[in-house]
Image (cartoon, rainbow, N blue to C red):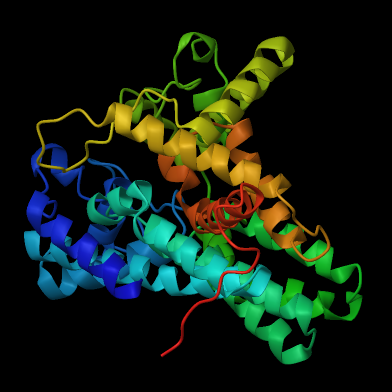
Length: 408
């Protein structure tokens, strides 16, 4: 499965030539905010300038991926095609490695057959393939780290101990430096495990804080905001504003500094701009609670069905419209995974899977949803899809009650 996933992704990178990223708009399409901050780092200007024509220090992003991308810029050239190619090939390697973790997770939560089938599902998952071959972003690395974290939490639940607790906490700390939003899964898992193993709580809570604290202190010193990321107010306003109810995606992406609001961002500064956005969003929610509730329910539907109006395009060199494929894949995967939550699960043994599916989307239900945001959850969904396929096969008597895997 590792080799299958790697070959498919690498072949498609070269077939579609997705490393040839347009250079217009200050190379904005090359990693967007990640690319801009990586350029600033590579040029020795610090963690700054998340948008074109800006120079200010920033905490708009967590530091992990921009720093790694800046290393590629230093080695291969800023915004060079070879840097893009290496970034995408790195995605392919990380995504293929995720197949191995999916197999181990499936074996840990269910059995070896489920692990193998889940690995096949993820290896051929069009969502995973598309983000791997087109996205110069942290999404593939975050997907791998979250899957490793869920596996480590499962091992910790089965065999609690200080060593396992330290390993799990370190993984969580590293994940926090790439995608802080994923830590909601860790928080839910820690609460679940600490009910029985409360002595591990100081380790599980303290080590990620120690790992992330230097970055948070930097943000306090530079931006006067003790945080991992600074942009929550902006994300909240994108999905909660007077125009959002009339849009197909339940969000207005134009309300973002990368579009028409860059002058406001530059005038107010990052923290001032984010606070201004947050006040507007909270005002809308307070004055229109019914509209907010409807928007939340719409975002729940969009998250699981992929029905927002953004096509799969990116840097793909293709003439076809992939919008229908995107919706079919996202919807079928989402529904199958949700069915898997109810298909013969033993809730004590599978609670970490349930918590992952329940907790991970919560910030996006409140703010706004795109297909990229769901990507880190796709490996967990692949396991559940593999589980439900085997469950249905056995219930319909298409498969024997036990499926054996031949080992050479």
